[in-house]
Every structure is written in C-alpha cells, then in structure tokens.
Image 1 (cartoon, rainbow, N blue to C red):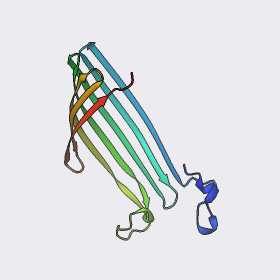
Image 2 (spheres, rainbow, N blue to C red):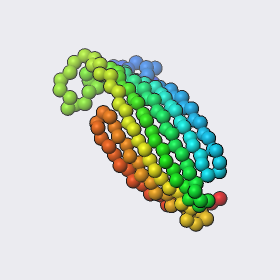
Image 3 (cartoon, rainbow, N blue to C red):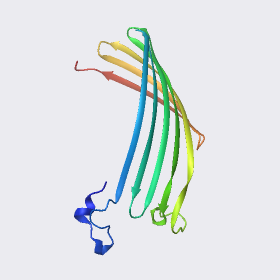
Length: 171
C-alpha cells in the first residue's frame, strides 16, 4: 500500500484524502511439492501451485485480478558421479479480468469514457527443458541446457538455450 498520501498528499489539488490507500496489491499463494528418490541415481519432483493476485489503484481507478495454476514435473538422473541430466516440464493456466477507469488506459488508446470491464481471458503455456550438470573439476560445474515454451494466446513458441559455468570458491 502507498502511505505517501499521508505525508505528501494535498486534497486541495485533487489528491486522495489523508489515510487513503492509493495503490494496493494483495497476493495469495499455495504450493505443494512432492519429491521421490527411488535410488541415489534418480530423483523426481512434482510441484503444484496456484495463486490469486489483485492490484488496485484509487486514481485513475483500476482493479485487476489474475488467477494462476501451475504444474511442474521434473527428474534428475545421475548416470555417473560427476554428471547429471535434468529434464522437466511446466503447464500454466492463467486467467485475467478486472475493471479500468477510462483515464487508466494508455494515451494511444482511442477515446473511452466511464469504467471499462476487461474481457476475461485465459492463457495457457506449456514448456519443457533439458539440461546437464557436469562437474568438470572438484569445484567447477559446466551446466548447459535449453528450454522451449509455447504460449496459447499468441501462438508463440520460444527456444531459450542457456549455459552456466559455476565455480564454487568457498565451501
């Protein structure tokens, strides 16, 4: 919440009254993680999560809600002591809705008046990744990998290669 109104607000100039929350953000989350290690070479994990975000502002008025549900299965296989293979996926469903005062729209938006209700929209994304962790030396790890994501609302698919060189200088 924005407490600056109490110190710097001036109601004579149209600012909100002292003590008014001009910007608020509430979020709620729940996450459940389950991990299974059948032997020292294999570890699996499943993460389920969900949440609700609500962002609101007094002037110009808006109230936006986002609901998200997510599932992320993954596995780590260790065929050798100094080498691991990480594989996993992610599925996300996200819903957005809310209301906006016309003054909250960007300047390039055609003339609007009154309160606008956002059309409830639902988007989905599906992702998968593959990575390796090679302990080349005692404290040096080389970690290449790649992630592919697909977004339903834009029909966009993104390929994201990555590489990390990690040196543990302190134990």
